[in-house]
Amino acid sequence: MVTRGGNGAGMTKILVVEDERDLNDLITRQLRQEGHDVVQAFDGQTALSIALGEAFDLIVLDWMLPRLDGLTVARQIRERSVVPILMLTARGEETDVVLGLEVGADDYLTKPFRMRELMARIRALLRRVSIGGPAEEARPASDAPADAIVVGDGLLAISESMRTVTLRTTELDLTPKEFELIALFARNPGRAFSRDYLLERIWGDDTYVTDRTVDTHVQRLRKKLGDESELIRTVWGIGYKFQLPRG
Ligand code: CA
Image: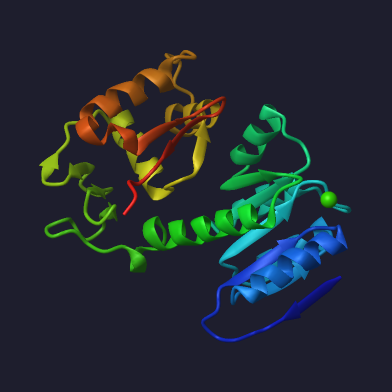
């Protein structure tokens, strides 16, 4: 079951997946008022086929859904797309949150929530994509390499090809793991990463890892960032995220 409305070119297109019709309608109405183009889906299976069939700027995805649960939907979308996913969950359990983030959700909100809070999160996610996301949106810093990820108005420039990280005008001396950490963070500003995810993603099958491996590397990385150490924030009970300074 799908309904859609407003199809103006250049609008932000959002998929709202929620089986409680009243709530779905409420979210949809609010998003349309803010000028977004919204497509609604009321079960996981339909949501997945819509999400894989056309491009969206953001997906609001409920966890408990008929036909296919939100977690599975998120995981399958993530295999093909980097579209920001905001998960809605009735559960507030820490492990659930971690699970959601590990399958690739970018943010989550526990029900019941205030509509204003949801809209704020959505705005933040959309903004984040335009800051740290697609290359055409990134502004090159003065003499940064062409492939550089540039964040915070030139505060940090990361070149994957040169394996260099430049903080303002100073090139940082990083180990390969520290480089991979900050590159992953900077590509996904605001997204929280669990320690387990980071371990698997960056250390993989490396045998010499312990529970403290991620923490010690983050500590060293923060030290090297000096005054900008707050770029890497601790997300209590989960892990870390990259947070750009305001302004
Ligand atoms: Ca539900």
